[in-house]
Length: 249
Ligand code: NDP
Image (cartoon, rainbow, N blue to C red; front, side, top):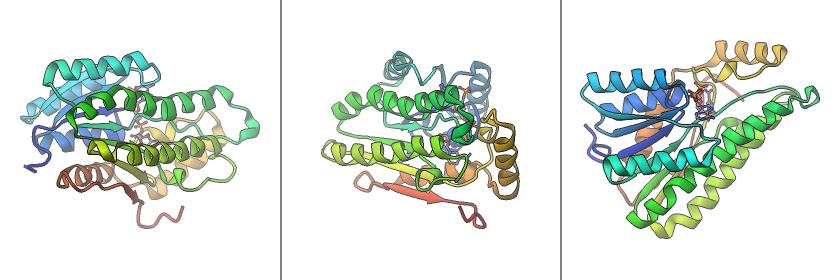
C-alpha cells in the first residue's frame, strides 16, 4: 500500500482498455478509489468487478468525453459518491493517422473532439472542485507524437497531442497558486487498442508493424502515473517521457 495513493479519488477517462484500464487496476491495488469512465459500459463493469474481487474500490460511469455535460455529470456523481476529487487522468484518446491528402476530415474532427476538447472538458469539470479543495492533480496524456511529428501520416494526431502539451503547461502555471499538480505524459509505443484507430489501410498497416516491433506493456505507463501521484503533496512531477528502450521516434 502506498500512503499517498490510498483513498485518493481518481477519475480515469478511457478506462475501458489499454493504458486507462491498466492504470485503474494498478491504482486500485495501491488503495485508490477509481472512477472508471468511457463509453463501453460492459468493459467498465467488468473492470469494476475485477477491482472489487481484488479488494479494491471502483465506480463505473458511462461518458462520452466529447460531450461537456457528460464530464460534468462524472464530476457530480464522483462528488456525490466520495465527497472529493483528488486526481483526474485525462486519458481517453484516438489515433487515426493518415496522410493529410487523404482528407479524412471526419477523423480529424474526431481526434480534435476527443483528444483536445475531451481534455479541456475534463479540466472544466474538476477544476472548480480542486480549487475549492485547494488540492488536486490533473494528469494529461500527450504522446511522443506531442513532441515530434511522424512524417506523412501523423500530422493531425500530433497536432492534438502538441495541443495537450500547451494546455498542460498553461494549466500548470495558472493553477500553481491553487496547489494543483499538473503532469503530462509523453509515451512511445505501448500495447493497447490505439493502433487500430485509423481507417486508412496503408497507414494502419504501417502503424501496426511499428507497434509489433516496439510496443511495451500498458503497465509501463500505469507505473509512471503511480509515481507522479505518490509524490509528497509539495512535489509535482510535471513531465514524463517514456519510450520502449529500442524505439528511436
Ligand atoms: P485505447 O484505444 O486502448 O484506449 C482509448 C480509450 O479512450 C478507450 O478506453 C476508449 O473507450 C476511450 N475513448 C475513446 N473515445 C472516447 C470518447 N469519445 N469518450 C470516452 N472515452 C473515449 O488506447 P490507449 O490506451 O493507448 O490510449 C490512451 C491514451 O494514451 C490516448 O490519449 C493515447 O493518445 C495516449 N497514448 C497512447 C500511446 C500508445 O502507444 N498506446 C502512446 C502515447 C500516447 P471507449 O471506446 O469505451 O469509449
